[in-house]
Amino acid sequence: MEDTVRSKFTWVIALLVFMFTMEGCASMTAGNADRMLEPAATLRYPDIPVPAGFNLLSQQSYSFENAGIRVALMKYKGRGTLDQVLNFYKAQMPISNWNLLNISEFGNRMLNFERDTETCIITMQPQFGGSTLIALSLGPKSAGNRNKRLPDEALK
Image (tube, rainbow, N blue to C red; front, side, top):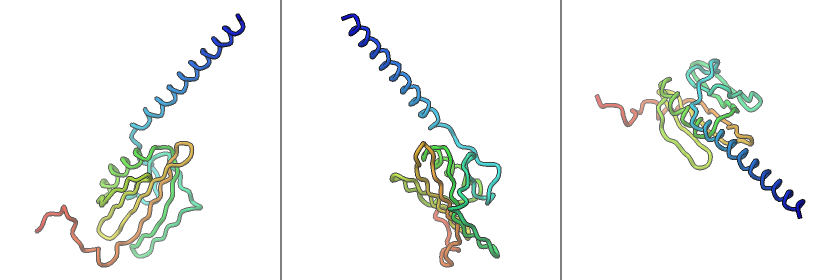
């Protein structure tokens, strides 16, 4: 009888330790979700920021520049939630004169930016282990869209 009580007591203690450990891990993850991401110091394109700690996946990326035309698909992987990465780009892209056109937030995240002659589409996908995959697509605007005024520009 005494062995049964001791065995039950041991299981209860083990269960409590497990529950407190899991609660601690969950609160650490939640605390990091509010953390703002910072831009990396070295960038392939200085006017397109990448969060610090995100590494270029060179085997899955390409870029081309010629006579003022830039075309690229750059993929990066790093630690950060989808919302952290989304908020990073919403804050950082306007600093380099990119105008946010729209956001899609169904599962993955997608942001569309433009400026005078270029468009930049940024997609974010969650990856196993708490990391995020970022794909930056950069290209020229079609000729018909280059001179259109943005809706919020004042009429002259």
